[in-house]
Length: 356
Image 1: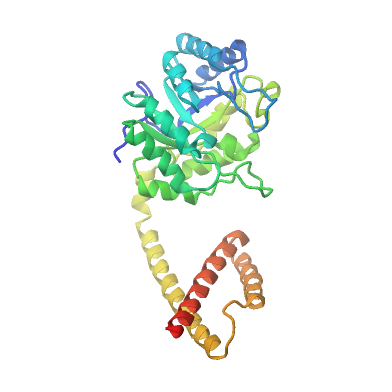
Image 2 (image 1 turned 90 degrees about the vertical axis):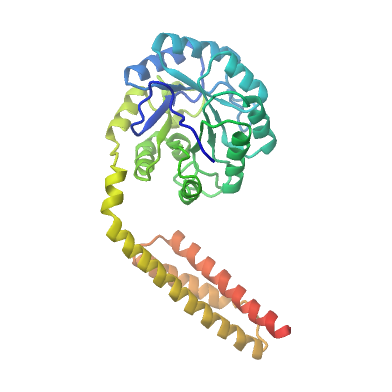
């Protein structure tokens, strides 16, 4: 797929592209005050939630099309571009009617191919830049499916927003990053712009700088950050919104590394990585050979393939060893689970061949 630039006229291509504004457009006064403060900080694209369906009814669900009139005033008085989230055909029509400059599709909408297709069909023939948030759950193919639906409708100015993934487990993040998923997306589509959403990923303002820096270190194109003139009075997601002044501090604290220079300087180290990867797979191959020999022994002695007690001992021992070697227990557990799964598969193949 050949994507076109999402950069609007007059927007510098220098990283990071910053899109900022309140979680929700709550009132004309709040919108204008936030926009003016952000414009004074040099922000060029103003974001605001207009339609805000919440997880449960009864909360603030946005001002709807009325807020689009306030965004028109933002454009007129500050010169900023404006961006909103859309989830239905009606939203798209309203956004186009009021001159919105950029759209994004939210995480919940991305999970629904019917909704994405409806939006894609409505945008066919337009030149609108569209950003697609990752789905709520870690499903790369679903994310790619949404991209393809927009692309097949003729939308070429496409980018994605990485906002993290939902988890039932308690975590420091509101939505865990799972960085490997957008990394794989970028591998498949190298020219697809990726924007990080540290507000929704962290869920609290204290994490925004750390997450934003990680995104820049991974060569993300930009950031979309929630900013409110008075976060403590916000009607939605107050814990994750920054004042425009605090946002300015975050942006100016970021270290933007020279990706071209670093690529040249890393050639030797990357060669070492290639060699080590080769050795890792050589060792894994030897391990699987031993697993097949164990499978043959189990077959001859009428033993079941799965030995849960032994597997439990391996997990506990190897994870402790990995932690001592400065690796996370979560990483070690994932590796061991994958190796064990393949070992069991290898032994089942031995059993199956014997039956034939």
